Amino acid sequence: MTAVLLRAAELTASGKPRQAIDLLRPLVAANPRHAEAWCRLAAAHLDLGEADQALDSAKRAMVLDGEPAWPQRLAALALSDLGRHQEAAVAARESVRRKPGDWRCYVVLAEVLADNPDGAVEAFDTALHASQLAPTEARAFQVLGDAALRMRDWGTAEHAYRTAIKLDPSDADSKANLATVQRRRSSRPTQLQLNKVQVWRALRMLSLLLVGGGLLALIAGMPRPTPYLGFFTGALVLCCLVVALRLRPFKLLFSLRKLAVTVSLLAASALILVGWTVALFFGATTMQPLVLSWLCAVVGGALVYVGGGRKR
Image (cartoon, rainbow, N blue to C red; front, side, top):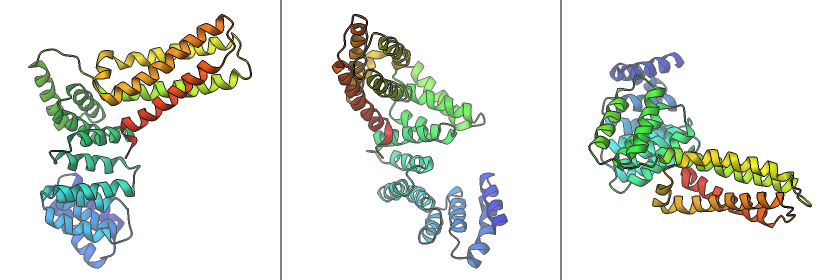
């Protein structure tokens, strides 16, 4: 049975889903309670464009003991192909609920949301989260590029497609879409673009530095800080500055409300830390500014993890 399942997967992956179906039909007939066999059959039907048969097979797998999210993902894709977009979104969300750490569930959710006229923003956020969960998977960046392309976020789309091509040099779709993005960008007046993937990663690193470094400084400065602590916090400020350079162009950071609040809190934390560091060298012994800086960093860091796609 294992050999047949592996062979069916190879046939489907190599563009021969009909042969995979011919292998799997006798297998599910003889083993009707084998969830993986039904899922393989559903995947082969999807590749052939047979959405009805794929949905039937996925439903058979749902009631059996097996991989908890796979049947839901297959059902979501089949329902989307059938034009039943609301039901597809429900099935995709269920797959995320059942296996929240699986990047493939977020990819499917992003794909089905993209088919809904009102789902473009959520599709982008979901695809961004998938790329964060699976930074070595080309498919995650393909879907992120598609979502960014629909939102006319040329900077993120180009970054995503370039990453997908780097991970999978044979990816013809990403190459074609990258050419489309570059053509559309060149046909418009030159304007600054905000790379949201890079921005959220930089903000996450910045929040970790401010929260972690601030906590260490709090511990080291008790019960009374000395000027020597200023060397540590000074080095911390320099590290934050290096990371903050990845947030350029800075003026676009305030174009989105969520980004503006997050950046403001982290900037306030860093500025307070700078002022306290200078004060240390002049003999200051109070810890209150450091506590305020750390609290700003904690709140800003929480917003980073919510805004960066971890809310689902």
